[in-house]
Image (cartoon, one colour):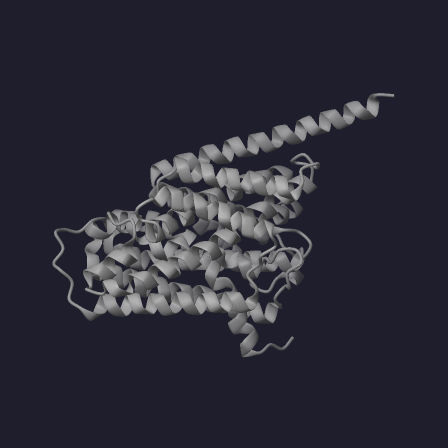
Length: 408
């Protein structure tokens, strides 16, 4: 199948807004606190894990075009209980990611009332989705241009003036793998193009074979440049304490006049990324209901409300650093199952070799188990509780159905 450069560019632009969300605007602060300048080489490990996982979801989406997301893929390939664990990990990761994106928005756009700004973003984005708003290809291209342009200005400003000597450095190389896991969530929006929702146009394998490496590679280059810029200008110790690193880097570089542009970019990125996160969580809940793991009478509006309430609770209960950690850990567990499922795909269903799924599985497990302890414990507990609740709901529904069949 032939493809054109235009198709590849538009596919990459469609995925960028989902990728450049909370990670590039807020992820470097907790990462620098753990590993300092080692966050930059850690990004390469994160990007490799994301690349393998993107290959796996793209292959599975091609093999199961009518099944939505990793939950459906794992159910088809590995069975019911692994699928329930996958759904739990995905929902936990998405709720925490929604909180991280919203808190990032509040810190940049409404710094005087960040919590109110965060909650307002969740509600407003949910209402936009309920009203039928979708990020078309044209809108995604526009958002990508705005984000890349503003981030280029931040990098240029950060390297345009010598930084004030830092009082000290934070982080150690011992946290390299843990930070790689934390920054994995910075790349996790690739499913916007590798596993499109129902009703959305699927991208051909020929386009994805080029677009996926370009998307991950471009995102890696952006994160590397921005990370180097803010680390140079603020130093790792000061960066670790910053709620809005890009804004503080501009102020330190005597470029405070550019701060409104960063706020606009943060607002645009927040809406785009949160829209994808909420839609992705809704898709998993829909799959659970369709397969009988949740009550089938739940309507789309009720499922959307569940997602919004969970996101609001996460915003209220989690600080930004913890939300980023739980989002990354839950998402890594999710891709561990997804890569395991991709390993058993038939050769005819593959665009990429099995070893990429094997590598993705190994990296996902390694990075998840190297996360900061609070985030890992919350994720493991959430995975267990979520899987248990889904299993209990399905069991109760099965018993009620059996009872109705026995009743004359």
